[in-house]
Length: 212
Image (cartoon, rainbow, N blue to C red; front, side, top):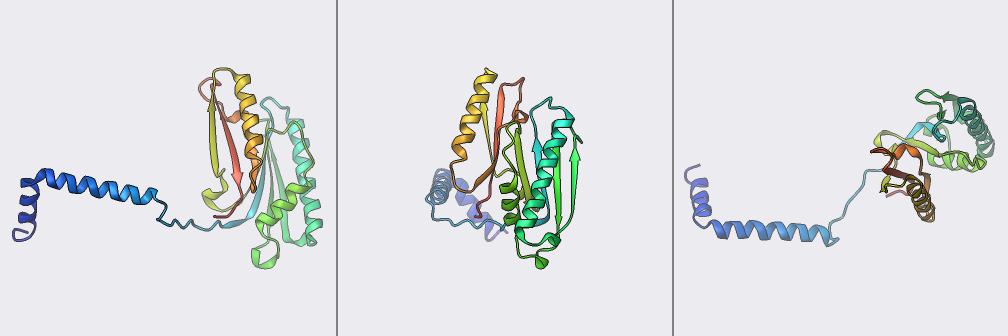
């Protein structure tokens, strides 16, 4: 300690301005290298879950009966997707939950057999399922979750702020239409759940199914 660290510390204190300049320049070099694009990032692979959920959200105040009808439409689409996949045995069960948190929310869930027992992936099954769902004009959002862990949440979250609620709603819908043009972007959510601070902020969430 006395023979090694003490002389270095004494020199650093004695030439404190040089020491500060060395550390500041080193920090700038590190930051510049990070932003230069030379550092390669490797993302953890997305892990699919055998439990797939279709999360339905209707406009606030929607009667439970209407939410239930939409849930039945989504459930019927599951059965058509299974027929298109050519193997109805890959699903162990289908369950529906309506108005468990509020009258405008419902969930249709499918429990698939393990991946080793089926040829279609979770993402592939979701694509078949999504394609069989007819257009439902009054649906606020329909989000499919087939990833294990936190990866099942929306990949990108965009929030808009404006004092006028109608203007905010139109802006969110226009932004949703623009985002939908990007390949691989699905399950865009532009609903009222993003309102905060007395309706002055509205969120727009969407799911990006592209693999990194």
